Image (cartoon, rainbow, N blue to C red; front, side, top):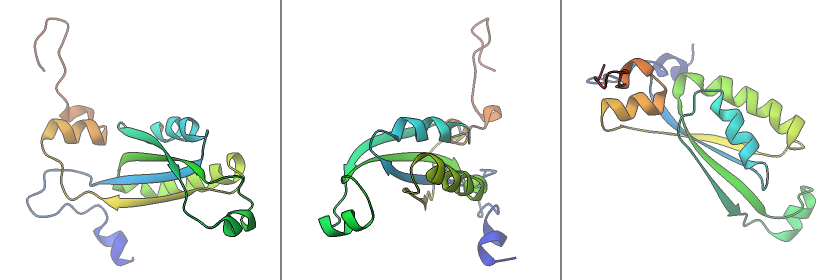
Length: 139
């Protein structure tokens, strides 16, 4: 077992979170952002932001890689760390079938989230999110 796998799902001291969260950054061809954002929702990504970006690669490199232009969709998603390997495998398959083999995905660890309700929403942990029942009482 690698060191990353050993510490992957181990909460840090004082942590109440059952799973750590990471920011998943996915960069795809412009126009494919909505498709990939919808696809990432199937991995319990409750919060996503999709922006349009412009690449900074030289024109000769863009042409060499077979890219039409430097416009990209950049998707920021918050996901549970224990699902990252599954998401990367699925994205790699989608990059080859939908995006002609182009796309970049990486994660950035989140060191903390303020509040149980915020964590519950971001991690899709329904048991941590308060809900109002039909009588207006918080459960």
